[in-house]
Amino acid sequence: MKKTLLLGLVATVLCAFLPEFEELQIGETAPMTDRMMKDISGSELSLSDAAGENGLLVIFSCNTCPFVIGWEDRYPELAARTAAHAMGMVLVNSNTKKRGNEDSMEAMAAHAAEKGYDCAYVIDQQNELADAFGARTTPHVFLFDSEMKLIYKGSIDDQYENKDRVATRFYLNDAIEAAAMNEKPDPAETRQIGCSIKRG
Image 1 (cartoon, rainbow, N blue to C red):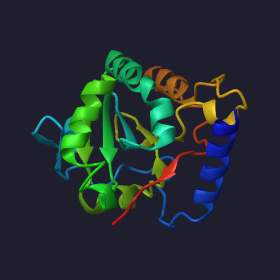
Image 2: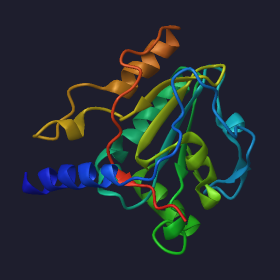
Image 3: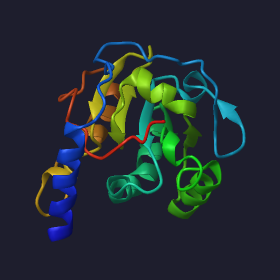
């Protein structure tokens, strides 16, 4: 309990000192959709390549953030859920400062294999995509519809809002289901919680 409370306090403090970027707003179009990024498979792809017929889920992530580690067991389920609704999913690692060690391509591939990731996991060179999105933390979620318009952003669920660290509201799952029915997610925006992206 003390450890999880400490994590929450640290995240709150870190968020207060995150660099200011113009964050993508609900209804805006995804930027840099044709920028090619290297995937752990060795190939390159863009957000346009990763998108499905009905949209795309983008999660800024990494290998070592305690909040990612606490949430990443949802990644395979999210990949399956988005695929079932003809949506794509991509994890984006923008930790430029850690590229030489914990967040190298080799470390990313090993981590993805260990944790059973079932989606693209790409390197964002010089954190350019994170800057364009205004992404601040790992994880930071952005869900786009078939026109690549932003319909949800924030957290995966409310796990880190609860003292016992058990999720009771599944924001992202609900947003994906709403999008599949051509409805607007409610809420469309929640507070992202996590470690700051380690920009260059």
